[in-house]
Image 1 (cartoon, rainbow, N blue to C red):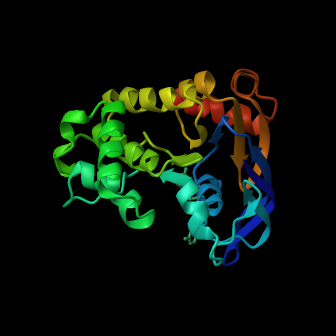
Image 2: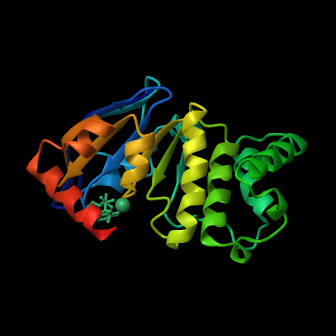
Length: 243
Ligand SMILES: Nc1ncnc2c1ncn2[C@@H]1O[C@H](COP(=O)(O)OP(=O)(O)OP(=O)(O)O)[C@@H](O)[C@H]1O
Ligand SMILES: [Mg+2]
C-alpha cells in the first residue's frame, strides 16, 4: 500500500533521510523507532506530502506522492495523520472537529458526516463529549478525538507521530487501547513511538532508524527482543532504562 524507494531528503546542508526503502502492506502495523532527530517524523511527513523529498520515490497504492501535484489532495484524504499534539480547533466542539474534513474536504452531506462522527466518538469512548470543547478534555481524551477525526476521513492508512508522548503516563493506556483495537480491525498503520510494549505486542514489523538510515528492520518481536545491530541494542537499552 505504501512504498518508499531510496528516499533522500535534505534541509539545507543537513541530509536527514539518506536512502530510505521500506514498504507497508494493507492491514499491516509498522512501528518506526529510533533516536531523536533520526528522521522519523520527516518520513511520515513525506508519506502524506506535508514535506517534499529530493530523490527516490514514495507511492501510496501505486500513486506517486508529489507534494506539488494535484493528486496530493487524494493521497491526503486516504492517508490520515495523528500528531503528538492533537492539533484540534479549540473553539469548535469535539464533534465539529471530527466532521471538519468530511464536510469541507470530502463535501459529505452534513447528516451523514454527523452520524458517522458520533459513531466514531462512541468507538473511542467519548460519545458524551461530542458537544464539549477540546480544552475541557484531558490530553488522552483529546488524542482520542484526534484519532476519531483521522478515522472520519475513512482513510486507507493512518500515520501516527508519537501519539502518546505528550500525555501523562496514566492517560497513555486509553489511547494505546484505541490504537490496538484499530490494528485488530485491520487498519493499516505506521506508528512512530517510544512505547516498546505496544510495538512488541501490536506491530507486525519494526523499523529502527538512526541518522537517516534504516539500520535494522524485521518482525517486531525479533527486532525488539533480539536486536542484531549494536545501534539498535544501544537504543533499546537506553529507552527501556527510561521506563
Ligand atoms: N522544517 C525543518 N527545517 C529544517 N530542519 C528540519 C526540519 N524538520 C526537521 N528538521 C531536521 O531534520 C532532522 C530529523 O528531524 P525529525 O523531526 O524527522 O526527527 P525525529 O526522528 O522525528 O525526532 P524526534 O524523536 O525528536 O521527534 C533533525 O535534524 C531536524 O532538526
Ligand atoms: Mg519526530
